[in-house]
Length: 487
Image 1 (cartoon, rainbow, N blue to C red):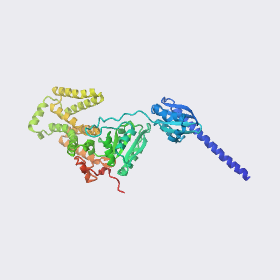
Image 2: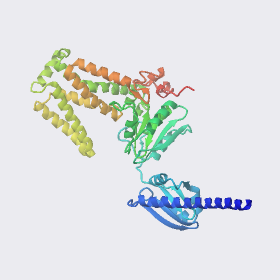
Image 3: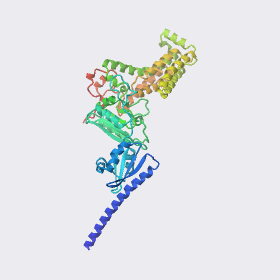
Image 4: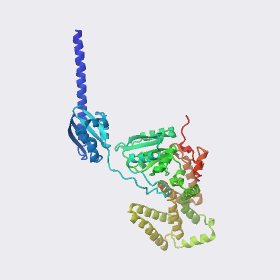
């Protein structure tokens, strides 16, 4: 009786093992069959059966993400001659995880389905064509390195690691996007990064529910502290030397595959007027350029509104000779100053937008010739005054001084707010708008850090590298905006 019971138990265990083996076999087959159905109309996904020493192997890959030479050297030749090499460089994946198997295929990896053992292996064969490393057109400098990031995530990370050869430089990869899986990489220096800021950033990224990311600018807007603000709350750059400097300072940098720019967080309002070339120049030259950019921002939003205020409400603030010139130049203009300024400002915006959308040579011609012709014709026709043309042209040039293009767009938007305030209330309206601007900047945060740092400094030494850049020998300490937590 006991012997019979032992045989029954043993038979049951054998049956369970056979059933488990069959389930494994069925699961692997089902995954491959489901994968075939899902890619039925995807012509660049290929299934090839190859006879090997270990039985038939189905090779599955995407021809648009894998070059033929790479596939030949890493997969087909080893399968035919040295199949042990496949096991050495491959990775076994869970056959029941259809989503994971599909993600591997979509990321450029090659799948190998061994029919005899019912296992699925994956080999990283991603070799899609990428753009070569070139110089940047948006952040060009005279002094310093001339290389710029490309749209390849691996290339961008390698450009940074060439400059920071330190084992404490960490990067964490993850995938975002509910529809199109896009890889991003969060890079930071382990010993200097603010752990609280890093955790906050990771939580914000994990909470994102967005279908597709075509550029890192979309991600930047989704993780900002105040998405309604016109001010960019994170620094963006395509220069490896600039990004490396911020990493050394303890900042967090985000890279995205298929995007050239990198996002630096946290950052401050004053850093939007700092160029990496400032650190290559003498401190006197760098300080002069920084002050020109910083005060140019406020001049560009105040210049044309001041014209409206002076002519509409406060002519007494102008010298008598200048007032006579203004009155003479506006003698034929039938519109009040507010509509006159709005008209010429919108013409400038149209020329700027049209020039940016046309081919480079045609766009430059449209911008120069169109501006001269329209400006001259408008003055002769009595639509605007000649003095206003000078003011608007100067204001447009000042808006391009910030090295970050997003800040240039911000100044253009805010200028209209000041123009309307000046047209309604004069200087009083301008002061109200300016008070709103300062209050708004004071309340802004960048990853929980005050946006007006270092004027609201974490450390007194931050003031050495703000609007005025002191000599390089005094800039050894890290800024307070990226100060690590106290342990």
